Image 1 (cartoon, rainbow over the protein chains, first blue to last red):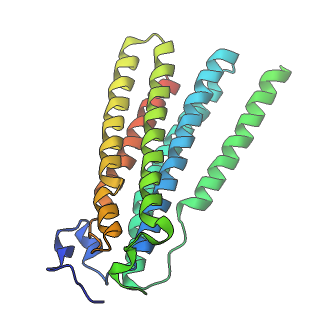
Image 2 (image 1 turned 135 degrees about the vertical axis):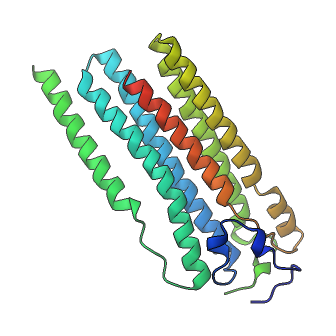
Image 3 (image 1 turned 90 degrees about the vertical axis):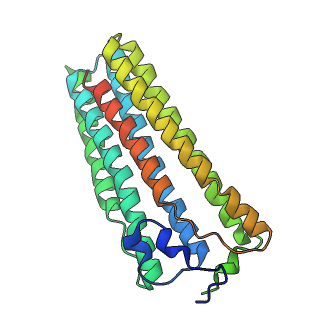
Length: 132
Length: 114
């Protein structure tokens, strides 16, 4: 691919381990990859917000300590999703640069499983709380 | 694949959509940080409010520094002028935003386990 932008600034771009590989992809694909990573970060923020909301709801409705532990797990899950967003961006950008197929999102099945487990646990905890 | 000039005129509003995605993310990070401080304030535990407030402030600063560099003012200008696409990397602002989210998550963890 031709470069009309003067001396290649690729050497200054970080991370070097990414930009030293392959050639410049269509910038629209890079921007789409960036937006996907941001959507993952917002998902992480939503999980953290749900955890904070849950712990304050547990306080108001007197749902007990178990709900606080679920909220703590949600905060940890949110932090992990935010980190995996950045790592996933790097993997996809590398695939774009080297012309390989895009890797599958690693965090997606774990996120779905985590949300499912949290939903089931919360349903059980709240049911026990209501019926006893 | 098209060349690096393909952002001239911002086809499909790619640059603008990315800038808006950065704005949404920055606002969300600040809102969640404020929510954590609000909930911590109700616990009436002074050290918890202080720690949560500091972490939320740090995360808001990181998020808005990321938004400022990520709103793509230079990219938009270059694209509108039909000029060269600046070869910057979103790596640092992505790392800053993820770090902000982790900071908010940690402070929320403190709040939920108080």
